[in-house]
Length: 291
Length: 132
Image (cartoon, rainbow over all chains, first blue to last red; front, side, top):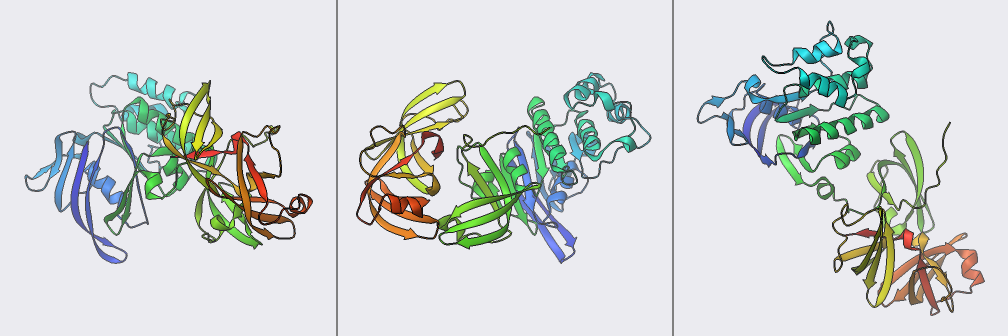
């Protein structure tokens, strides 16, 4: 269990803002921090990691105090055992993939973990290459592996997928879920992508101007009814046309555009730009192989 | 969409699929899903559940429907018909609540559907979605 109760005065573009967070995160959960930029998401990660000191409060991780302003406890970042992955990969350019991972090894740590991670995150063919020869998705896989070398208690991902295109993103999401389960991690993810959040996380914390405004299971926070449907996508409405008592919605789902017929009861509450969840039974689609 | 409240009264599991018997009022309905009680714990006998299906998936019949393969048949009386050029929306009053069906206006004409007619609304088992 991670208990976070922190206050910190921040200077944002809009002026002064008080970051005031009081929440707890279950061990082993995958939590998403969600909210507008400047809401305080990255600050929370940096504070947890010990890169930024709060003004007041406590951070307790599995009964160990990482920070307590009253008792003047403030563990150094290297004592906190967290793994970080940022949007920019921050790999050492002069080292190969494998050397980048080895650099993260702690003194006396067995290098066995490197081979294990190379296997798990499928870096075998890339291990002797330099970062500059890698694609964005490949670099991010290396950054993920590197964050895991120390076997962190908490893995923190600051929009690691936002610069990647959908297919690569999906693959990396699978890798994150895989390592999250395999290493029994508590993972904190910053994301803006609703389908990514629904697919990946079991707890959502929505922030606005330094405060938690909504918290809970993602489907509950987004007020999405859970259907048993297997054919489910989130998309954005790009056009709505009313035709008699039906509505024809044009929806962008990833890079595809689809048209959907909505009934009046569904259609009249929708506006262009709305994010929607589309659910259908999995028995209807007809499948054609693309060559 | 149409939403009816029901109770699960039977589960038949085969591989990844489960056929679910649902009691909605005094009517027996059935749904099939790519889930089992292991992957979806809500699949438990006696559990209350919402039965959901889209208006465009509701087929209407007049007269005897005994020899039709459809497993979900709800008898009712037409309460309202809104006809457009191609499609018509028909609201049927039944013992389990109102059911809306969208069918072609040609079908409405051919079946000579009018307010007060007794009809059977039918939905295929694989078109029924469930929600807790």
